[in-house]
Amino acid sequence: ASVAKRTYAQRAVTHTNPAAKALLETIERKRTNLCVSVDVTKQADFLRIIDIVGPYICLVKTHVDVIEDFDWSVIERLQELSTKHDFQIFEDRKFADIGNTVALQYSSGVYKIASWSHITNAHPVPGPSIISGLSSVGLPLGRGLLLLAEMSTKGSLATGSYTEEAVRMARANRDFVIGFIAQQRMDGVGLREGESSPDEDFLILTPGVGLDAKGDAMGQQYRTPREVVLESGCDVIIVGRGVYGKDNAANPDAVREQAERYRAEGWKAYQERVGI
Ligand code: 6AU
Image (cartoon, rainbow, N blue to C red; front, top):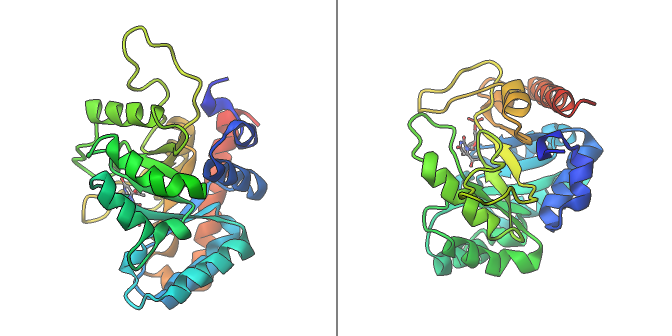
């Protein structure tokens, strides 16, 4: 069956990258394809929101560089929460430089991302060397990489042949590239004349998901979990402000309620997609 028709459990069995396998197993075990993006600037808020949404997510997405009172205890607490609630960690670093530089940014500096983040992402704009650089650090640690094949923003340049080249880069590096940040499945994208469809399973993680808003004032565009998972065949919904939003941040019950709501919507759309 096409990848979109297979269950997460079936895909977990055949995936060979440890980070992809662990994510698929977590999704199946917890029956959730929700990733919450926690883009807040205080470590207390960051950890509090993650502790609330933890039971409802397969993955937490971080922008660790926006935490203004960051110190290493944030990483230790995050790892404790990851064990307590059974979720994976995705630092949304969006690497975009030459191989040598991204290898340093990934392994070193204040954040040492590779040491704690199971999954990270990169823009394909530098070409395949960005994958070599990152995989020299991440592959020995069992990490996985997502390429940004498309973006959720109005006027995104990541379309057409750029998206196709991103998929070709991923196809040539399937040990480390586990999938894409994209708005739809990439099955068969970028195949050249006469090339047959390879037996591949890329995970599609999709931001720009919201049930109550169509976008924000800075070009973000939202679709519903149903549109994303059922109609576009994506695997994981990434929700930030829809869950912890400005009003929710102060109110734990509201944050929990939204996490439950997005989890339920995302899972229902998946069940309908695979027919279970
Ligand atoms: O739900 P929001 O709009 O509050 O947050 C969406 C999150 C943000 C963005 O940095 C990120 O998703 N994002 C990405 C990622 C994940 O790489 C790509 C993209 O195209 N759009 C997008 O919003 O943390």
